[in-house]
Amino acid sequence: MGEWLINLVRRKPIVKLLSLFAATGLWFFVMNEQNPMMDSTLNIPVTMVNVPEKSKITPEFDTVQVKLRGPRSVFASTGRDEIKAALDLVSLGEGRHHLRLQTVVPQGMEVISVLPDSMEVMIDPYVHKKLPLNLIRTGTPAPGMAVAGMTPESATVTVIGPHSAMDTVEQVVGYVNLNSDHNTDFNLEVPVQAINNQGKIVEEVRVVPKSVAVHVQLARGLSRKVVAIRPVFEGIVADGYTVNGARTDPTRIEIAGEATVIERITSLNTAPVVVTNLGAPVRRIVSLVLPEGVTVSNKMVEVSVEIVKK
Image (cartoon, rainbow, N blue to C red; front, side, top):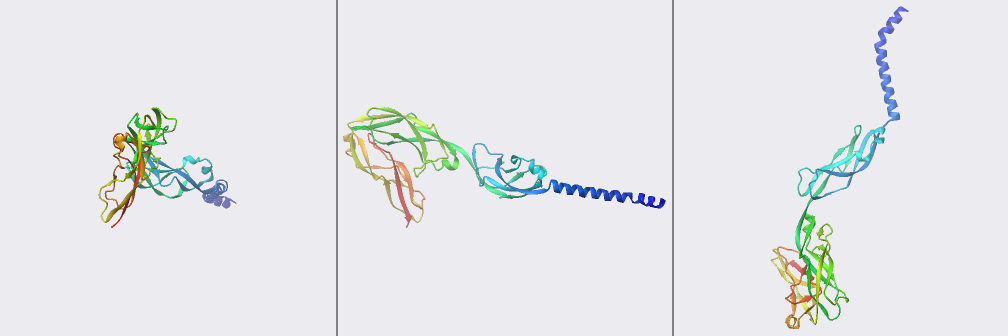
């Protein structure tokens, strides 16, 4: 009996160690049963940090797929806004940059994968410039009346937008709408728009002010005449190419003015379309060159220049 007790005492450290292993195993068993590890894949919006001032930032993708692993309890207590996928734009300038995404997750979570794990981002600084305002008449005034002049409150406007969009702005126009009720001088608030060389509005920019007050002068007794429009281009095209011709849309236009002025006019020239170093056909919207005292219903026309290989 005494010897049995002595042996038990001697074995106590082993018993304690076995008890510890058993308790640890039981803890892991309970945790795996009640709070198991799990994987989850989430679509996370891409955020930008250290963004340059006064720039338009365009990432290649708006969201990325982040695969995470962690205990169920951590997922249950984590808000989606606590999981971040960010692009650091520190010290980056204008242009395209290929950047690796940086992820931030709560403690206890592990990032398994990020798809994509890198992407291109475009940094496009905002710029502004002053441009002349071109007024375009649409419609016709009352019978026997002609437009003698249009005077805008401001001859120039400011265009603001990303650099890449600003490069596409060909001109700023305002459409002055005339109708048969107009038989005396009148004032009109005219919306202004920035357009490209295809005559389409450049949506990415804004014009300040958005509209301009225009004073329209009407006159009676002006003579009218339809004349041809002559396209004008200048410059030397790229080596190996030649200008095969040019045309306008419209090809003819009605002019108005004093009889002694317009009787000598057989055609109107367009403003020059520059073709220097071009190797492909080009279309531009340009204004007509009007002699003093001559008016037209629409001063802007489209010029197409055909450029072909020799």
